[in-house]
Length: 531
Image (tube, rainbow, N blue to C red):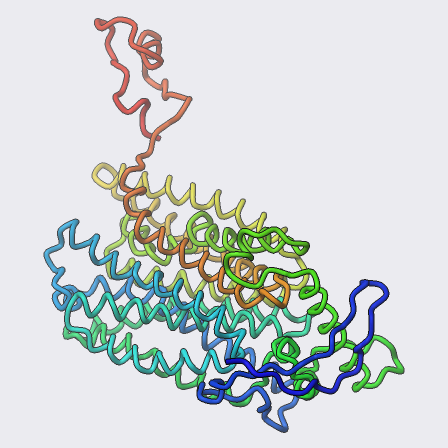
């Protein structure tokens, strides 16, 4: 139950002539049950932390959380290939039915991500960003050991969903926390760096299983990689106590006295005038945030999941919400991020590489993506702009994926007739896949998360970040569950333009419709020759 304390001291409780909004007297909002929620209280701020230390701490904590996210996203893609794991869950026959069920276990993780993000978007507005992260880290300390010890299919399915719940909540809370604490001139770089290193986590998930399978054949091959997550969770729990709470959440809850200390620690304000003191600059930043929040409240900005998606308001919140959701869905399912995470090994196997080599190459691809992402974060995030990044990344990525498909086709086409040529095309698949990784890392890897974290008003930012994570999860879930059926159904065909090489004019005539049953060269059943 919420209780109201006396109004907090604040300057700026005056009307704004320009906005036509009266800034309301701020009242501290607390909850009687809040003290029982684990984590640093809203009033707690570690003393002695310099602005440089704060920025480094936020970067480190955010990177650890997203490494954990990337690791989890790809972990069961590699674990599912281990024979001892298949035997434990009772799916070792190698049939198509078993492959589908294994895919369900992997895809169930994304259902958990959706649940975790939804819950986080609500709870982080009540107890703060830090307490939310601590709560789900504690849940992770319970879930991961149980997942490591799994002994049957039902066990794996339920714990994988809970594993996703932890990751989805941590992703959502961290995105909001990072966006609300970073200086606006460094925000792009800060968040982009966190997202870039997530690909290192994905790569490590493949390397860990690859390395262990070369030395061991027991269940340690997949149990140890699952348990490694605990190290990252413990590091996150240790760091969280040194870092300040989101200043925008503190102001939203009426905790003005704590905000000044937090902003001083973060140094996330501008001293625009040469004669302006640090105290004046901080007060100006506080008043600016307060005014924006009061404008949102006066004009009833959407503040729950239904209204931010479907109720039009003066802040175009539904447009922001659907933009965030669809950008993340596109990054996973349409641009290709989720496809490589789910089917990276299959792509290389289609390119003619054996399973173990394909696993290694997939891990290297993620390292390439992550390294490119760091370069993109440093040089492009705050310079190139978001729209240009999206457009360039999608265009180049689309061209590259077409070329990868064509090369993979020719690998299969020449595998029995010309091994040397087939090998050259398989090398082409690897080269193009790495180039795709560079392009994705420089563009969509970080921008697809950064943009949604920026565009929401304070009242709905935590839920907006949750929606972006949900879009990410829906895209990945679609890749896992629908992608395999789509790609098995798709074949390589020539549309509109038929191949006329080495055909008589009469045979060419029949390509567009059978004219005479007696004319040789019947129209192909598939509507055209393969490329």
